[in-house]
Figure 1 (cartoon, one colour):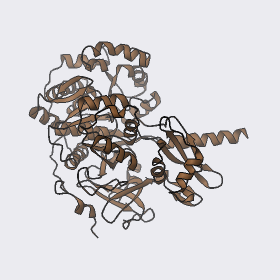
Figure 2: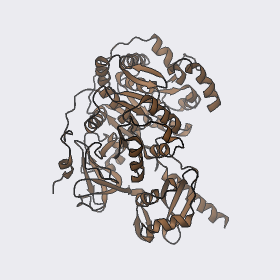
Figure 3: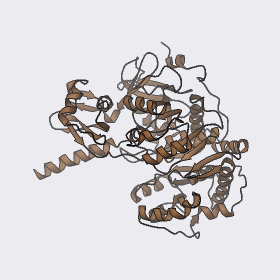
Length: 565
């Protein structure tokens, strides 16, 4: 059997190996600006910015960074939602020779302080409403400069006048920052700056473009070191996989946050490389998203299962025309088959599951979008230049088809390592393979399947139980909108299976009915012993359900009960 059986499945349009230019990420913005100067690069709530404007404003910001003393390799944080400055400052930092540190705008002061200390960031770009939080943290970190922007600065008239009132109502504050001292207003920087080119040399194999912090669901978040080559390679792989999206022609819906590597690569970097229009939304709202799709007619819609689920369950879904959607690649969490089928029926486009992680820039696998075969329930096959294997948990050796082990990856998109964590870097690599921490298997044809995160496997009464298998079954019940299955402590079985359920609006179902439904499709030891109905589930900003938060909540509940007994 071939070591890479999936290559035999590749359609003729997708090469198995790619060539990569020895160029920095920022040089591709320059290329797109030269080729398509007057084409729209960013659409944001009615305002449009051309490729030439994005390039020139990025140059102005880079020059200002140099003026502030940012040198090659210095870290500069970006703490923004999906607004135009998230793109402009990203490329400006790279032009100045800096390394971007993507920072979640929802971070508390404690989380922000940890990341700033760990990364050693010298400056941070943030929003006016986040300024109080950042300024409180800055004195205990290496942050010397705070660059502040505001959503209203990038809105067309009269939205720019109305927005401060909306902001005050929503957040309860209006923040006024002066352009003085160590505080800088992006609007003032770009107003007075000159777009002069900066010729910082870049070693694309070794120079870091990004420190991308892991989610920190277990332990402290780690800074993933991604080079220019890592990110360029993944964007080029995406270009090859989505070959129908011709240069300068597609438009991409940018809901996935850029501070998450999936949104950053599949929307922002890929759009700049391929001169595609980005349609940005600063946060996910189902109604706004449906209106935006109908009005702006994006062709590409990278997303996460929770986003597609929310749209499918919108009460007014039938009123909107979503037929512009040609292709969607879903990531961040397993895509239920039922959701995939329903979304394809509603849009007429293709929705396929992909796979990746922060350590791989992030994508490693996907199903074919416009070609057969597509295997539902599978994460697809490895992308060009990507090697994947299933390694034995006992020996670390490659497994045979259909045998369960740990998914491991090799390829040009694989990280350089973890920032200042040599021991953890060493533990994550084995014989050149990046260990993903995910359990799965590969079939005879080369399609990969994720069983579950190694740490999420439930061991109940000596049996290994994989939450995803149970979730797939329960998603088929007509009353279920969203769910997650976790292992919770159990005195007798060690762990037991619990399902947290969100019902569709107006739907009703009892635990007994769900139990009966599950028993028709699952072995008895896999059937949830407990059910809990909720209005919503805890999620990350990219829409991944926080399974561990529910486990911790359950553990605390049991601990409190023991104390009271």
